Image 1 (cartoon, one colour):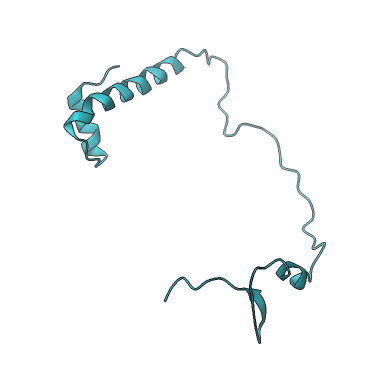
Image 2: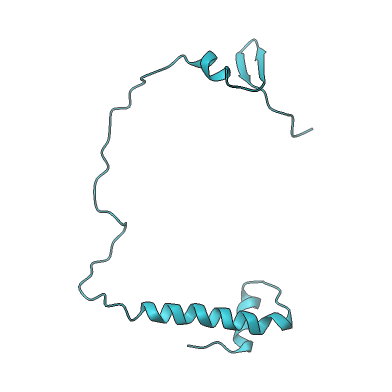
Length: 99
């Protein structure tokens, strides 16, 4: 399949992309290369290959959801470049972004 310049303009219009007239030939070549690559994929022998919903058919191994370490508040905040303390506790301090 090969696209002509009018089809490239139509695709750009449908995609709501402004394409200058001098870019149409370049885009035509790129789109034709993509379509040629897709046509190559049609040559792959897929008879007898079952469709997959994912790359690997296996069940995920689950573990118990258990808290192993907690109450690390001070150790975590020790790495903070700046911190803020108030009545509710200590927090990471970040620069104000919204006025």
